[in-house]
Image (cartoon, rainbow, N blue to C red; front, side):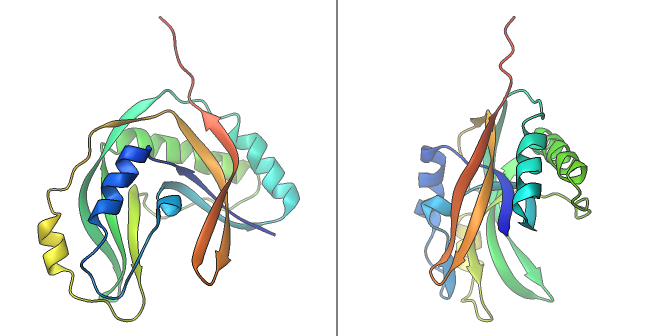
Length: 181
């Protein structure tokens, strides 16, 4: 079985800016450079045949390059317990459209549609049952913003879970269509 997801890898200078933020919260399991991405669709566990079908279906997606920037920080929680710290993305429209195309490709290969609302972000840290106070971090980085960067590709990744966290490997990269005048 293969544990897959579809994501965008921000450029190195953007990732370095994110890495520079990562401190100041006790109990945070900070992401490393190799883990920084913008998820378009979590696929989950699939067999080799479905993985191959998905690789082909994603290759049929057409999109033009677009620009986004990181903007602000926030948290996801479950029943009041914070589990993820993230950096947001603006604008979201082009990412949402690409997410919809990726979701349709997944459904064409027999996967269930992703019915959750799509909120593009880059995960900065994960938390277990206990997390240190985050107010100082949130206040310090509330106005965090990156320079705009061009999204001209996305990739299908395989995730391997290990004791040191997840490691990600690119299975296939998909490029935007560059349109000439």
